Length: 579
Image (cartoon, rainbow, N blue to C red):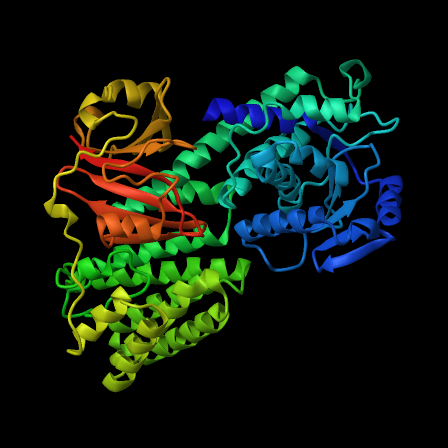
């Protein structure tokens, strides 16, 4: 993956000209080019001749998805201007005004990539968006003409850092938005040079290609680390390895702040806090939980000494949910999850219960309001009713609670949490937990069972290692001629010998994987309905910003499916804890 991704970033890197400070001439150019633009949306303006075109609709759709992935809706900026082709270049970002200018021919060039046209457009726009979001103090151009301008002084160490960051975070942003950025750019360089008539000997003012490649290598390397950290954080959260998942999320947040990442950190903290409640202290199944039904009846230790720990974790979770809300006030999931954290704080500390439950009630109702008539937040709408039902029950209103749980069931038939909480109140049967754990499974990927994978721990940990901290090691192994890879997590806490520790192994399908699971699920036919029909209800469903993870536990291994926002299967992995 990194090799292919490097080709993408090299193309972007080489074509992203180094920048100059905003000059009087450049400011006038921007003003003049904007005089005949028509407003399509508060963040999108186009020249009149392009107003009703297919191009306009597609460009705005991709632009909106990228901005949504960032989750920063505090203003309409960045703003996109679509202009007719001038022959000067593809795209340019103006930091001071927050404007990105895209030439029509830039879109046409991306269209030549067929099925990958949207991916090409996404990586192009994402690169320029990063320059705006990161407040790079330059005009950052993607193959835009510098007439009689020397870049000798502009190609500074600071500028190089900006370009590496745009290479890296542009890929991250496109990835977060759900675009497949791998393998679409190897031909992009030739297309741009041919389209714009660029020749090496005529580009004396550009950074040397060798130097720009080194910058791109650095960006590609950082992107690879991000992907591995982010994927491992999500997978460990599903496996309830919460402390280590938080470390990986922390590494991601150092460079990339988004509403989804902040929300996921909060969810993990709430999950961890729930382990410190006894069944007597906490009877209900909260919509923030990944495995609420399986937890019910088990509980945690709930000892008095745990109260300070769980309350600290819940307050920390609220901090992260509020950060997500700050980036996007219209993000309902963070508000619903904050309601769960406030409610649990009230359960933990009776002295503050009424205040916390009032806050939870406000957040839950706001989450419901924000989810109304929005298909993408359908689950949040029904979960909000569950949350209001729990709050009613906590306040002693059994009948009111049952009414809210019934509303959730009207919105979503057989809503697991609604049924579970009705059972707590003695008004229904507890939903049956998935019985997959009673079965054996022969699941393999690329025909490689775990016993057949060349899994030398020392080789993995020493030759393919990434160490986010001194106590954690992440390793990745790619297979020659296979469309899959392995991610391994090992914690070195409390051991002087890392090769004697247990470790977590995830064998993951690659993009476009053509195989199928033991029960016939493939990328072609896989969706939430077909998976649950073959495997039953999942034992856990973990929300992601761009979809969800479904977890199935068997005696000898686990199976985790990743779905997109449309419920379609994106990939899956086979998991085992070894050692």
